[in-house]
Image (cartoon, rainbow, N blue to C red; front, side, top):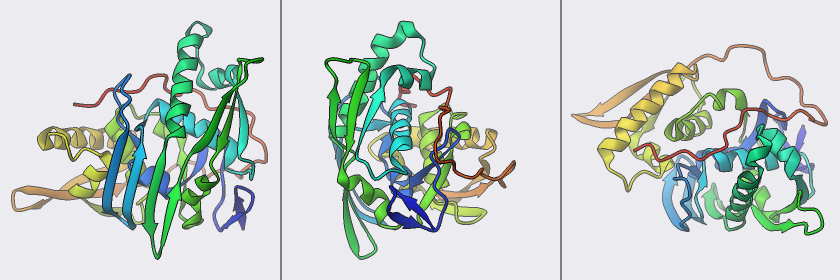
Length: 291
């Protein structure tokens, strides 16, 4: 038996490593991380009646990008996942080293980081899973140190644990190096969605559910479908998917049968108590909407 946040029991292994990170299904499955245009900051309210086990989903937030904001979230989750503490200090120099940022980009990069953390402050999610309803927040405080501007103190909400509490065994160890091979926003979002629903070698997904995860229902359907096809091609090219076969209902696209590639390579290494090496080659810029 392992412990999430040092007190929530799970039967699965917990990872906070450079190559692997343990995510709750809700974090990757729901449209928390999306495609966000550079510089765009518009508070959004989102409601989803049902999305594969999650019902009555309500979100109020500044959309978090599947690129830069996800990189930031990965970094802070690495600190939190095995700790009962709520507050942590981010050293900006170490954080830049984490991302392999050239010193000349420091000023712009720090402002981008602060904006990302500010967006996480204003995040709210409610969903029903089984008989219970859960309310989730990410952060409650972000404090800059006036005496040491190289440090930022962040405080997680106590309700952050609800992402994991609804089912502590419904967790997934994301392989970061494979994820970082993906360049397109749609492909990244679909990777998250399919990865957390990979229960068999081949799984059928309704097109309406795919579009809910992409939060693309308000866009031109023809363009969205074209970009979903491109995303599938990329996920096949990196060896995550074996195939993505359209399912037709008459002449209309009803969904896809997603066949996963069999996992290759070595099994996950045993989790270590302390991880000092930091993941390299994380993206520095949000990606544009793919249409």
